[in-house]
Amino acid sequence: MKKLSEYAKEHGIHYKTAHVHFKKGLIPGAYQLPTGTIVIPDSYQRPEGVKRTAVYARVSLSQNKNNLESQASRVSQFCLANGWIVNQIVKECASSLNDKRPKLMKLLLDKSINRIVVEHADRLTRFGLNYIIKLYPGEIVIINEVIEDEQDLMQDFVSLVTSFCARLYGKRRSKRKTEQLINELSK
Image 1 (cartoon, one colour):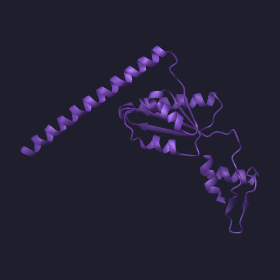
Image 2 (cartoon, helix red, strand yellow):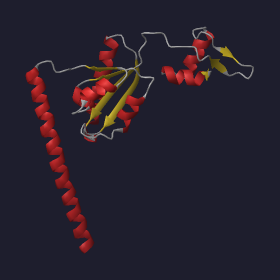
Image 3 (cartoon, helix red, strand yellow):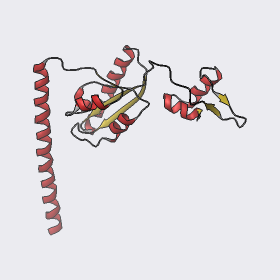
Image 4 (cartoon, rainbow, N blue to C red):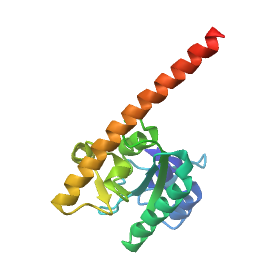
């Protein structure tokens, strides 16, 4: 047994929409207790074939927030063109090399979402995409997927150089900040 609010959250709809569904008899087996609480039986299953879709958009720097909005919009339009209802849009500002992205982790662990749509593979991750695809129980749709081997090799090369540069510049920045801190403390 679950309450109507839990049903609404599971299905990615507002509580009032779920209440309308209940009033119209669209939730089989649902009933109202004398206290007013609407209860849905555990036996209720979402109709087969109905997928809950999430859009994931990511940019590396917070300065690219405008690009983040347009990226999310493009992916949402792709979903609508395919007849998919977008239940959730997740936007994140973080490096694709950063493996501690809380919004992506929450999305991947969300059992109510069974389709994640991204514009490019590198929006999801630079390395280990095949692991994510294999381990994710739902479907991951990459809109602009690299098809040719030459493009794939070039993309791997760019990812490798990007990773190397990020580490190199990160270390330099760290070293500079340490030197500045030492200079400040020695004054």
